[in-house]
Image 1 (cartoon, rainbow, N blue to C red):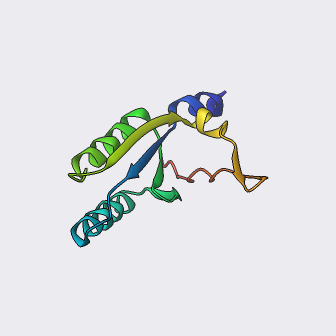
Image 2 (cartoon, helix red, strand yellow):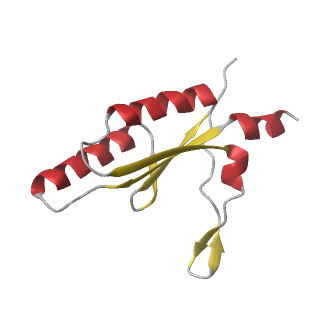
Image 3 (cartoon, one colour):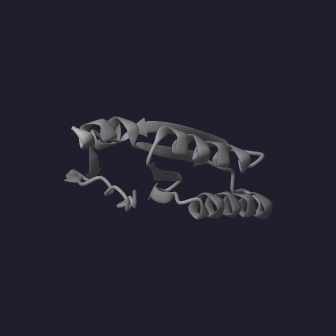
Length: 111
């Protein structure tokens, strides 16, 4: 029962972006944005798509707010939150072969 409820409380934050890289300054901004979201705990799921596991909706809101605070001046960026249950229903393929989605981060609870 406990894990079933957690499937709806635990969230994933997905950040999709398409940033211009025509000039040296634009490539620098792309690199800065990418490094900042990586330092916030996001991992690359695909090129220009990064994901982060969050223990609650409130925690997801914090990371969404952080991403919004570092948005570059140019480009197209999407931010989406899905529950762990919804994320688990995703089908991922490598070519014609099904692959497993990324595993959930293990976290210790002391209390």
